[in-house]
Length: 133
Ligand code: HEC
Image 1 (spheres, rainbow, N blue to C red):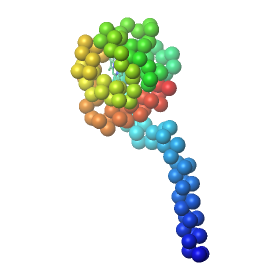
Image 2: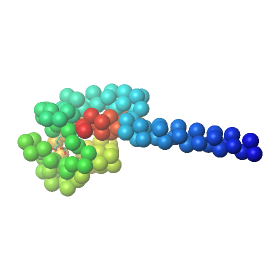
Image 3: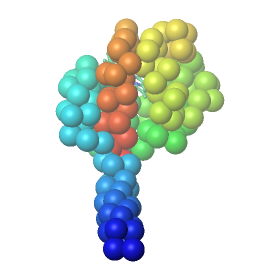
Image 4: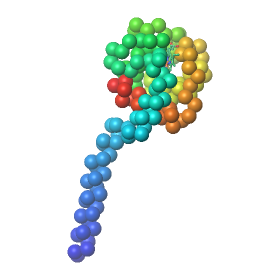
């Protein structure tokens, strides 16, 4: 009987530590991911800002990107390829876009070859999710 009790206590402890860490992980990517994402974003930074009301550079400001329609910034002049794509930006569509923008939306004017490595794109997207909020 005594033994059974200590086992259930151990389970209770495990369940508690799981509920404490799980939501925190879902919200903020770990430090290594953020660092890699920030490093990959150096390739984008010359053309894109991410902060709220950040100015457009060669490319549009990316604030509010996730869930937005492609070509949604009213005061930026997009190509028809982007403006008329009907795409909603999500982790999946941004990922496909960044593999090779030229192939994903032919005729777009983002002069950028792409981010070839999947782990780089993943970290970049996690970073963008935080930075464009
Ligand atoms: C040389 C400048 C340049 C670089 C570098 C660049 N972009 Fe762009 N980006 C643009 C331009 C210009 C557009 C608008 C394309 C169009 O209208 O055809 C754009 C569009 C976008 C869009 C669509 C925005 C919207 O409002 O629909 C996203 C997302 C994006 N870029 C992400 C990135 C990311 C992430 C990187 C780095 C990996 C990057 N870009 C690198 C110039 C650049």
